[in-house]
Image 1 (tube, helix red, strand yellow):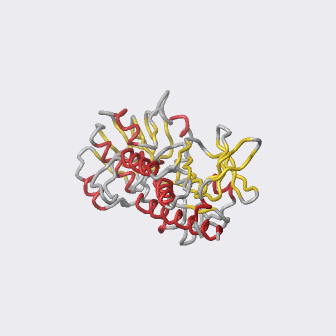
Image 2 (tube, rainbow, N blue to C red):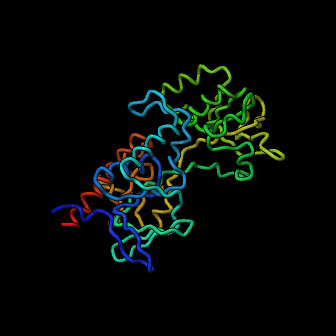
Image 3 (cartoon, rainbow, N blue to C red):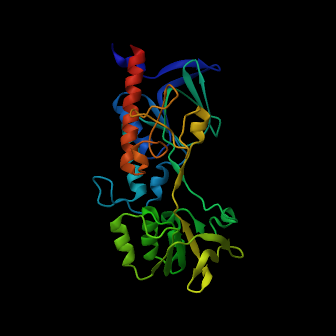
Length: 325
């Protein structure tokens, strides 16, 4: 059977003609863009909905482990992804999803500006949010010395004293970037050894203006109108306090699962969306891909996200083709 029946068609809704997309992709990071690129290759009409174009990928100062690029900024790579999705026919809506309903086999997606998108299938690619310290005054100091993005805010701390909380690759990369800008960089980590890629750790240990404080937590943030010092869970160099101008939090991430909750998607104990090897969720017509899922061994890498996005669109195509038959 000719598969032209999966091309967009028109229905009447509240006295207005509305397009029904074959696929709506919620999330505009690597997984979402990849899903859009592959959906376009399968001639599926699709729209990518997301407030932050490029997702958290745009916060990466340098990406050096994506095939084809020795080094590229997150913003530049994101721009290339979006351009390719657009060339392949994806449409874009720079908004957040606030509600989803399913009526007569069609999904209705409402955005924060009360726009409505109708679609036959959905790929959830909402990614993750940065984990918070969950200590007093964290929100108060945000933008006043406290940041979750070294790429975004590092230049505000030229020749100043900074700190990075965390011991993974993201925290070490942030510390490396800050070491070229700030006068001093403290890496504060609760563990006994860094868990970053060995190559990154080697680079960090060569920096003369970086000090690593192990087995230590930041327990409070202090300062008059902005962050001035942090209190540590144990003494360092004879004091429980470190005077600091800027603090960058890199302690991991949590799945952004508000959309998953709206759709009633099954998640694991940590909130990641459970999917099978086709990226299919427990709800018919809904797939998920990228960092918000249980697949790829929870390995939060761009290369994994784009592969899951491609698989999801391939599965959507097969699903719609089967229904058309």
